[in-house]
Image (cartoon, rainbow, N blue to C red; front, side, top):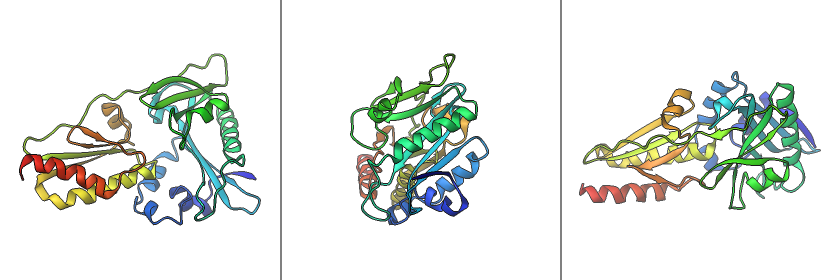
Amino acid sequence: MHIADLSEEHRQLYFWCLEDWSDEIKEAGNHKELWYEKMKDKGLRVKLALDDNGVVAGMIQYIPIEYSTAEGKNLYFIQCIWIHGYKKGRGNFQKRGFGKALLQAAEEDAKVLGAKGMAAWGISLLPVFMRASWFRKHGYKKVDSNHLTALLWKPFSSDAIAPHWIKPKKKPAVAPGRITVTCLYNGWCPAMNLTLERAKRAVDEYGDTVIFNEINTADRNTFLEWGISDALFVNTQEIRTGPPPSFEKIQKKIAKQVKKTGK
């Protein structure tokens, strides 16, 4: 295998999270590309894993922790490490060492850039993408948690300071007699971008009965105001977005609230 920095040749593939075969991923729009353009000069790093035939099998992206959902200093934060695992498209490359190679390359890169450690998020219970147990296997320790999402880190030096989650600070305001749908999104993840686009389509059916608030938390001050990077709310009820809810599910949630108003 070969680990390489993101090149112009593979930029669109990266924006699609290696799922160029998927019509669903294209439904997510160009939000990740817009986010990338904002972040590429702020320390964003992207590396790709290629097999011996030059096929892109996996990717990792990491940023200075100051632009993440955690608070820390002199650390990099892994937003995503993904090895293509579907039979469709390029095929299943999981459990072949690509993830480990990407993680090691990112850690070495962060050290060269002067970081004192690396942080990452991981799911604690479910055997899915970004497993906390996988990071622990590679020397990371849990330092904070937010429901099922663990914050893990690996210090590179003895004077490194552990990070902690930035906690949610507020929920959306609700307009009397109307339904408010609020989508906060950062742009880095097509899954959340897909949720945003589906929510916008669902809201369009209700005219003035439903207010839609689209809040881009890639703006750091906006994120710090909310303490929330990615979320979908119908009034003050948060809708689970991992995996992204279908258009029909979002529509049903809105319809239920509209019915309560009698409109």
